[in-house]
Image (cartoon, rainbow, N blue to C red; front, side, top):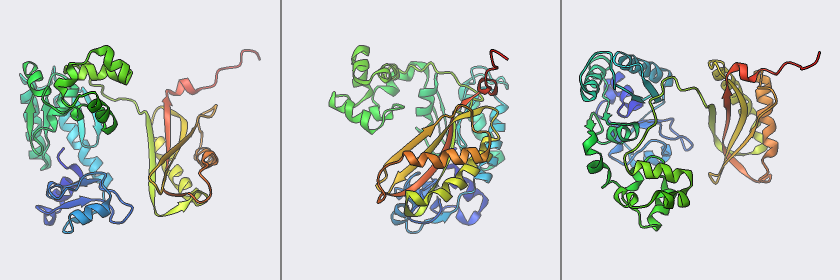
Length: 345
């Protein structure tokens, strides 16, 4: 979906159409959830501090996010997907992989399926979506960004090398700034350079990810589209209006733990591990976790574990924190978490 949250706001409020819209809570501690393409023209991007976005685009209209509404629209988009295939792997509210090797409507090509889905989204939801069509997930993701907004880009199997080899290595999934700099020191700036390296060399330099780099440089991605992927973790967090010492974080941890407990009740699987996240005033992120013998069985138990995890944070009494978060991870099937019966009565 194109600039999803901002596009929903512009669709639902005609006065916002054609204007630079930033979906964020206005304030020094807020970050941008989404920016319309009119705002992006000024350099505004998602995850950017809202204060910086306001400096870049003083005329921007700030809109507080409404995730309940976005989730409802996302569900409507997914219903359109389901007309064509059941093999849908959501990545977020606004993005998903679809395997249309076989499709329900009998359309002869994946390109025609993508075109039809985009038309249905436009006609029924008055929103635009961009699609990438390719032989695998890695290439389809690259293609989906190629002609945004409101675009369709197709990579045929015989076109993979022509598309892939000229790209900078930073376009490959998983290649962040650190990996890109490390590759640059090896003289690797483009995918064609990367392809010249032997698999053994990449493994020596990057470990197991070196194998992944070797495959991506050749357009290889065997990962299937996995519908209904089980939850790995859930978390909630909040940024303070002003930096606070560790001793003052307990009320927020308790509120977040209560919110997290409610969210966890929607999961069929059971989380084993409690995680506390803190971000210092210097933007350093700390996490502390604990896996009790038995999973937390109540909101009170979850809260007490989260609060107690603060005892394992030791940066001194003068350290200040700008953000706190509480999470649950290590999800297991309910039968896996049940205590073993006693061997002897």
